Length: 457
Image 1 (cartoon, helix red, strand yellow):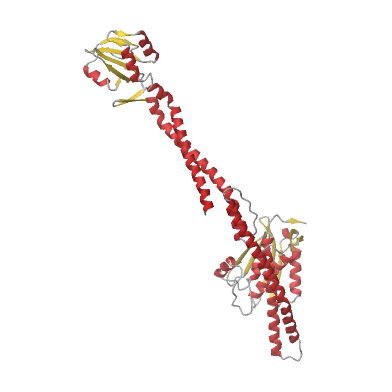
Image 2 (image 1 turned 30 degrees about the horizontal axis):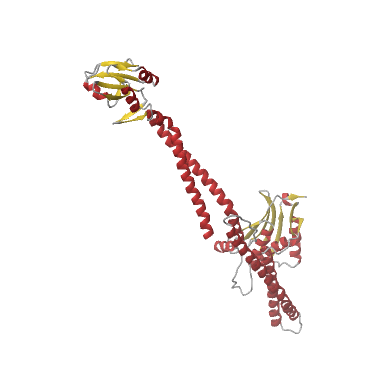
């Protein structure tokens, strides 16, 4: 937790630093954008300063040449009115500006505009000095004035600043997200792999290296535990074989003993059948364990799956399939010569488990169909029956929990139990997927999709 806190604090401090940098940048941009407005309109040529300079260089009798030149150079105009409101002198006066004013006129324009010209006044003992600026150069509000150009730019400036700040923050967010994802993605992927029981090879540097080291330690511990568990299952399976073989041997001898009574022979036959189921169960459990912990070496070879299915069906029928069961093999023309790379024994084992599930689940008999076809550029193997099927609740339970950890079946009839788990493990080892479909009294169907594009001979 401390490592994560430091990691988050680092990014938070970086974000705060970015905000402070944006504030400083905004101030700098504001100063750069409005430098001219500030320097000109509140500098030496500002209305107040111009009034002082012109007032100092003029009187009721006239104005100096230097002050007159300064007015004209700055595109201004000036007029001096005496106490009666008459004009004593003018400089660069527009034609529309009158030269005679009443006291009321002077009171009106002295605080605002004269013929839409923003004007500024200076009074002395002899009269009133008026300096006019170009139209739309200043906006006068009460006793203050603001450059029109600046007032017009302010909304666009703030809008631009907001857009720029948001863009920078968004880019910073994307960069931070990318950096965090880059640093945490290996850790998240490793945790996901650990949850699936897979081994990991994690290498992370920087602030999160401590967490990565902890995850690697956990992975090593889990790997050792999985290896020990698989070895234990393998050892138990091996140890069970000898006494189980003896039980099966004695049971078979009793079944064929002419001196034994029929009741004892029947009981010995039950022992023999259940011993075979236990043997198959132990083999499945051992194989599931090896596949789950990737300890089962795959002997892959290129095979024609249609040939494998027909060979399996022939062997099953010749082994004495009861008359209440029928087996069909349907191969589509486009899948007839399809070649896949797989472990022949494991694929045969998966097919046999699904077929045996159908047989065990339907003691009254059923029709079992093995189908092979090409669909959506994938090779699809289907094993289905028209038996009793299972309910929607059982189907959902089967998908979420593919084997029964607790069995109440005294006959050890696993049905679609551990056998299905083994099928899943075999298909995972071949990068394939399976789908299950079933309804009560409408049969049971398993679709097996082989990954990759199928090849043909």
